[in-house]
Length: 204
Image (cartoon, rainbow, N blue to C red; front, top):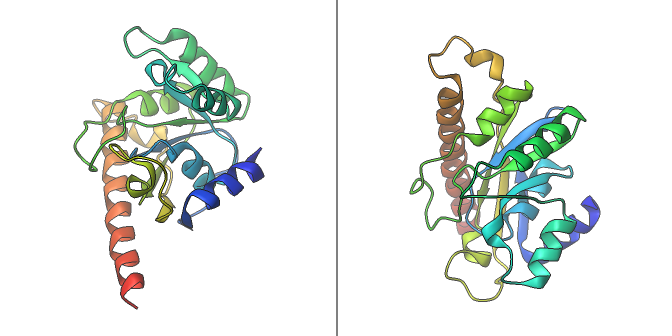
């Protein structure tokens, strides 16, 4: 499935990947969220298949979108009720050695920093004892972001950050909150670095 995802992603965007490889074994991948195509971009950055937690309100508007996301392994999750079933599925996937993807902002945003990140990604990582890997996605807001119509082929980047290990936060008063804050700090830094680097490359 990943080669097909790669073809889809490179058709959609002028793609670039940055950052270290993701650790072997189960991980929670947590990315910022600008566009409907971000799940494909995050899989390209991670270089592995990912099952995503996706809020159920996304479904029902497009039969193609519904089928595509479910085929790619999405796990529908309720926004209005405690998503026990989805969380059980995600935990089972991680304990089997898989990878779970989460967008802590919860929705697509216009600009980074406008949404307070939710704690679910850090909770999953701590609950299962696996690393939390931040992935910063840049440029997809111009491809298929909020308010966009159709798909525009634009430059986009995916930058993996160093993993966040739950054990390093056990002495904190609020380990999950501290992990979430560190995720936000690393994503913000990676986005700024990507923006500076790609701006220079466009000028050359």
